[in-house]
Image 1 (tube, rainbow, N blue to C red):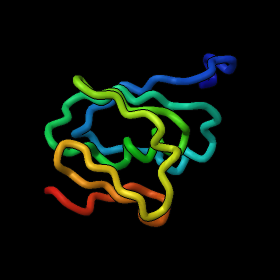
Image 2 (cartoon, helix red, strand yellow):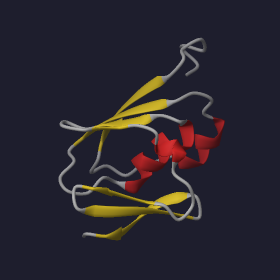
Image 3 (cartoon, helix red, strand yellow):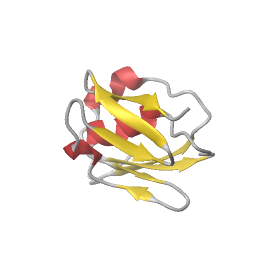
Length: 98
């Protein structure tokens, strides 16, 4: 973001199987993050959903794109690939399906 302060959004290419680091820095992000997620089997790592939701960004998978996660409220659920993710304490957590 320092290299392009005028950019309207940023793209994160991520490996779903790799741990997410530095989530504590997420509050400093001032633009949408578009997450292109690789290595997704059945389960999307909830941290990537949280990055997209917190920043007003989106998730892009091989065969599906997820927009408007920011519109989901506390307690709401979304089902993706047979897995249910619920917003608890303002974060996605897996509640069913694995």
